[in-house]
Image (cartoon, rainbow, N blue to C red):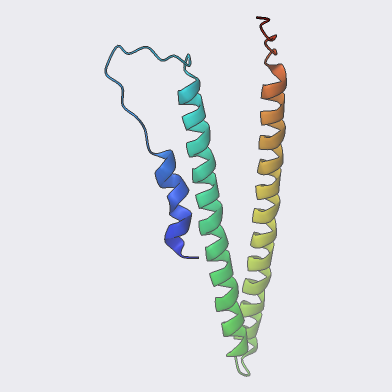
Length: 123
């Protein structure tokens, strides 16, 4: 997958149809809320993607520094702390990602459960 593949959802979320001034919104503003939710989700996903890429690059950089430290104890110690920090960062990002997904799922479930069901019309 290319990096541009991850930008596609953000570009799709930015697709806003412009209506002439004074045109009533038949959804009562639900489209705006849906758009904000979609854009927020895409921005958060993009930020997690960038953070993950940076954490992995930092992990690789620290690993290479550790391997090439030679006999220098100071370089090895600095690289080891970089590896530990990168792993902690990845774990924190993964935990945060799953907590946000869990909260979003429960939030969506609660918002759909609050809406009353419309009875079916009899012919």
